[in-house]
Image 1 (cartoon, rainbow, N blue to C red):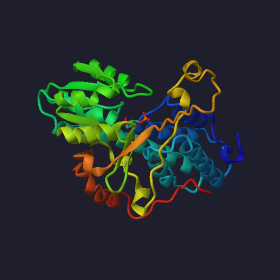
Image 2 (cartoon, protein in one colour):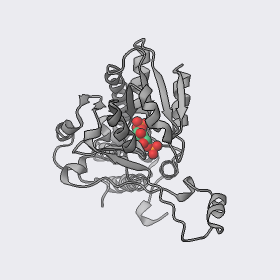
Image 3 (tube, rainbow, N blue to C red):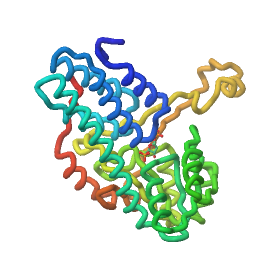
Length: 325
Ligand code: RI2
């Protein structure tokens, strides 16, 4: 444990490892786990003074923040919980932090179900929806449409490299939704059969650009060309406040082993260590607002270009990082 992580409880370290290694994944699920981890830190803290407690919580937040850079739901969750840390004694600080984390988790669940109801209004009985990756916000829209008595079919892109489309397909089949699984390269061909493209988001920038799983932007371009509307389901914790002041969203680059095994590498290059063969594995891409029809949030649906209005209302002008020393 480095000094920077002093006092951080094992539950936080293990949640951070789970997020970094994607055993816990999906922007909303990551935010939920991060809030839970801060509550665990508060509960198990052995801090001897209020200032020591605050420093421990900041160190825990930094540990979680450093796991993955792209989904803004993570820092938004950390900020929300840390800003609710109030009290003159360690016991008061513990209680307020735990209560704030629980409030965050409750709001997250409510926001997703409200978003689902709003998104479901865009889906008609008999519609075919094409999905990319696995997004709990996107699937909440399909779940709510089914609850409204609509029949929905899904074309699920497998979503290389980690094939997270399999997770979406499994959930959809649990709900009885007929699923056609396709390889990513078949998406344009199958858009002929789709009434909507429905995806989630890891971050949404102030200009309405949508940062989501790699491949989303190509899908959106094809959908626009084919006249299929693109709907992005994203709770407001996916809004990236720093983009209001000109910051860009960092795109996570992941391990090459997600793309090529050592054996495959050796087969291609003859030698597993050949430096002439490079693999790049960006986890996300940016879809410009002109290729998106609607961003559906728990606060209603927005044309992407007007999302900044909601962002200003929710986050004000500046943010700051409460975990910075
Ligand atoms: P929900 C995921 O990222 C996908 O890109 C998905 O569209 C997005 O998070 C939002 O997911 P990753 O963690 O919050 O799988 O809607 O890399 O569940």
